[in-house]
Image 1 (cartoon, rainbow, N blue to C red):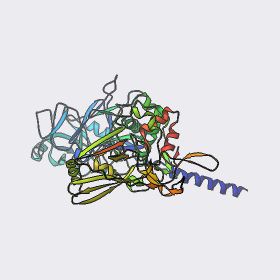
Image 2: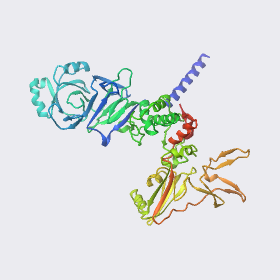
Image 3: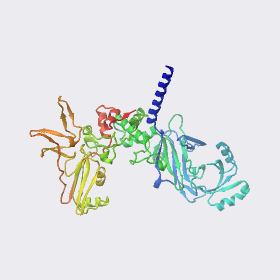
Image 4: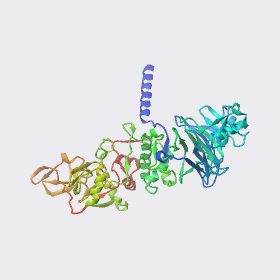
Length: 552
């Protein structure tokens, strides 16, 4: 019995471990790319204060491979600091510029470094305090002390003589991976950092009491710390390193707003948290997610309020899974009447992103901005637009939706021109024309294909509103596809046929009528709001828009 018990316990622990492994979040600290690539910065300022207390200051260190913050020792009460790439620069106002400026404002790129190595920051800081203008440098080899602000190697070498020559100090020149922390508007150096690109300088705001510090950067307020990556030269990538819950508080209000029902905001919080936790697309650039809708919008805490913070706090640690793995939580503003299968939009099957008729948006359609929309192209405009998209068919003679999905969204659009015919599919139908959603028609009613019974004189617009009556009298909305739909008429049983879509041909214009805004895959944010108003909680909302998911 004892052996059997131990075996059963081992099996149980292994199953828990396996389940935990499948559901484990890689790291609850996110790296958010704020400035990078072409937007990387020569110098970046931070300002750390709250509404009542100024001068909370910062600590300085780096994040290790596990994203744990490792403080190096330096702390400052200064609440305005600047991080600048190594080299000659000068302070003017609250900005640093490359080159040299007035005396007292210039930081030179050449310094004299004491030959003594120091094991701790405290030892180095004490040694630096013995010399005017000296500062601590953290290098791959440990702590060092540097003295002087020289704008050229020859100037530094000339100054070396007064220090006893090469037996006491050495000249150090600007590094391709070095960064310097100064008090904003001055040439006072707080720390020099250069780990050859292996680690990057990190700055953490210091809290006052139990209050969570907020840091200003480029007009936005952020929780968490900042990392300054300079791996192979060039300017600084500025990265916000933030707990995933605080990140979610900085994304939710910008994606769904801060005035929606609580349960809808909770659903958005789960989506935002789940989406962020599984992103790896920017890893090669040194971070996880960006701040734009290329990932999801994140602008810090300026737009968060009691409602959005409550939604994040009450769903803290809750993610969406499919078959034990994080689910890609796609969402959009509104679908116009039906969501769509991912395969019909992006060409890839996503098992939990299945389209369905959405009856909830209609309840609040009058409150949704531009829910119904219309766009008109002249013949010349449409021809030019297609050419710019690489579709060279000459002057457009006709354009029409040539295929609808069973949910009534567009799957194919055909253009007939003076020099040929071109059909585009899936999301290209929307992006080629620059339209707001996947739910539209050209020169006809919105809502998908027209299906006919026996003849086109008896037609139905789409299948979203079609219901069936079973043998026991049960009434249910039709969930199948058009290909297996049959109807009973006075003439017998007939298959439901898709009526041909007449090409929209006019002398000089093409009018597109549509509804909704977005790609139609996953959760409708306005639909979530409507469901919340009907009394559904965030779990029910997510389970409606995502098929077969687990929320935990």
